[in-house]
Length: 189
Image (cartoon, rainbow, N blue to C red):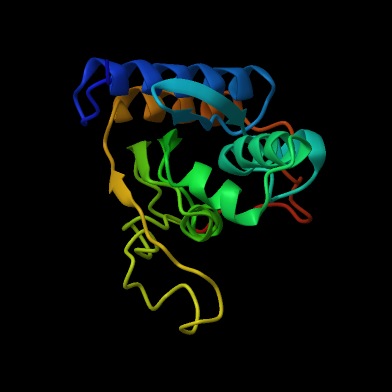
């Protein structure tokens, strides 16, 4: 029996809740609260949460963490590049915040089938807020022929209020890992 997949289907909401659990895990670990799960054939096969602070590596976004887990797993069992591409083409990603430009590019190159996300990313969004890298005809990715660019279906706004509430919690508590100002802030009169 196939799970129904649509923006308001029970399975979609279940997977978004699991992504929110990953975002809460990130928040509990003083990371920016973004989480995701990757689903194949109705089953979660990977998950990730932001780890930029603990790793001191700005590329360790939730999506990249989940992707790396799968790449390592699939390479260990001997899958070649075309087999890995075939597997990604059957996967969907559920993430609490619109993938940034870096992550949307990676998802497009990997050939992910579909992305469902919570809130928009008005500063760095790669799925429509800033660039539309999910569209197969996008010229924003790179010159034609340099990198494979498959595009993917994208649906946003799922459980966005919950995702935004996690961001608010993070910024209200203050980011203890943020750099300290080098000079005193001047108040303009």
